[in-house]
Length: 188
Ligand SMILES: CC(C)(COP(=O)(O)OP(=O)(O)OC[C@H]1O[C@@H](n2cnc3c(N)ncnc32)[C@H](O)[C@@H]1OP(=O)(O)O)[C@@H](O)C(=O)NCCC(=O)NCCS
Image (cartoon, rainbow, N blue to C red; front, side, top):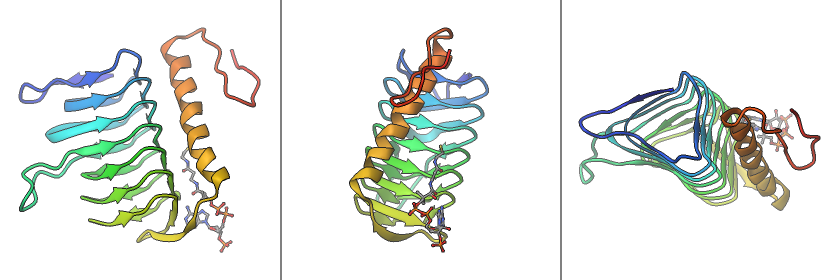
């Protein structure tokens, strides 16, 4: 992993978090307990801060950046909550993602958008600027549209995804630890 200070701000990474080789973490970035940032991702906290919650995973080749200014807000941090899965190759820009959200691979979230908890964005969804997505939504397409409310089973799948990636990150962090996911045989 590459950790870069910017203007005196050094990334703060919780000792139990795992950042993969080849990921770049720059400036005012906070990574929470048990979180994972996967190969090739870039979290660039130069113009404002980025916060990654507990047990959240940011999968390979995702880019997270922030917006510098809006009329009334000199700086708008990018905040990602707890137990969030951000799939491979997403662009997460200047937005807020609440707890227990699954962002499908290849999705783009634009400035000042807000994704409320227990929501799934399907693969390649685009959430446009300032869009408010309410809790328990399934969002698909470009531009992203709310197609229906999630079932309890689907909400459970969001946690399952976060737990799987949490275990997977720990298996990289501590080689030799069996990779165990509820319902699957352990892998050594
Ligand atoms: C959206 C998703 C959750 C499935 O939802 P679902 O309601 O079970 O969808 P289904 O697979 O039954 O498909 C229903 C319809 O939605 C379409 N659809 C499925 N995923 C879609 C997507 N991401 N964008 C647009 N349309 C999609 C299907 O083609 C199908 O269309 P049809 O009715 O015209 O045939 C899933 O496809 C998805 O995108 N998951 C994200 C997985 C991911 O990226 N995880 C992170 C990496 S590990």
